Each structure stands twice: as structure tokens, then as C-alpha cells.
Length: 175
Image (cartoon, rainbow, N blue to C red; front, side):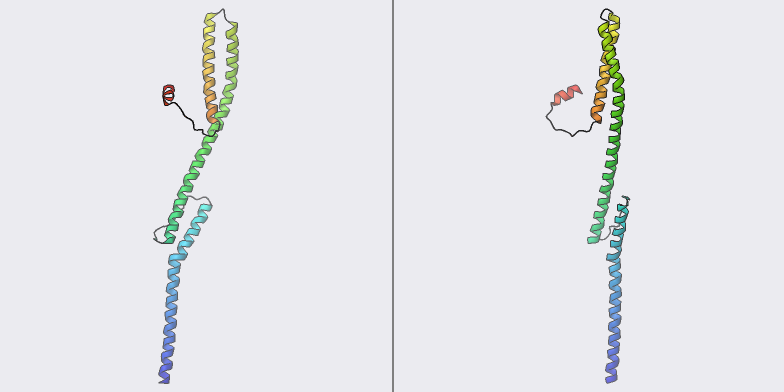
């Protein structure tokens, strides 16, 4: 009877160790499958985004907290990509504005010379009506070109938008 009890105790101990080992192995596998791998994928994705790859997306199939985190990560990378695209577009527009300002200044200098000289000639040719008519056209068109250049400079100049009341009828009439 003592031998039978000792054998049963050894078998129970062996079965308990096997059950503990099998449970531990199952828990390790479940932990690895549902926690460690998704967290590792999130870390890899985060590193890719930190390196500038905003096209990184994570698998967000799970319906748990880690799945929610992956979906939030994907939404964040999409918003970052959109923001980066908007910044690039804004930078391009700023470059175009600087270019326009430079071109406007380069055009404005000769226009000022033409306007000054044609106005001076207009005053000196009061007794020559056919020449005065041509000079008036030159002055008028130079002033018109100067206004276009001024509008270009105003467009290129960065300013804070201001809200103000406006007469819609006047705006439509000007348009």
C-alpha cells in the first residue's frame, strides 16, 4: 500500500508538472500571438514613420485594445501624410510667391522708366496732337501694367486674412 501511494504521488507529481508545463506553453503561445507580436508590429511601424515612411499601415483586424491602437496608428499616419502634402503645397506656393515678387520688381523698374519718360514727353508735346494721342496710350497702358504688377506683389506678400463687411452688389459689379 505504501508503494502504491508513493507511485501514485510520483504520477500525480509528474502529471502536475506536465499540466503546469502544458499550461505555461499555452500561455506563452497566447501571449506571443495576441500581445507580443502586435506590440512588435506597432514598434516597427512607429520606427518606420519616425524615419519618414508615412505609407506604413498596420494590420488592424483584432477587435481588442491593440486593434484599436493599430487603427488609431493608421489614422494618424494618414493625417500626417495629408499634413505633409499640405506643407509641401504651401512651400511650393510660397516659392511661387517669392518668384512672382522678384519678377514683379524686375518688371516694375522698366515700367516706371517708361511711364516717367512718356509723361515727360506728353507735357512737352502739347502742340502735336497725334503724338500726344500715342503718348496717352503709352501712359494709360503703362499704368494698367503697373496695376497688374502691384496686384502681383500684393498677392505674393504674405498677410494675415482680415474679415470685413463687404457690399456683395459692388463685388458682383466689379467682377
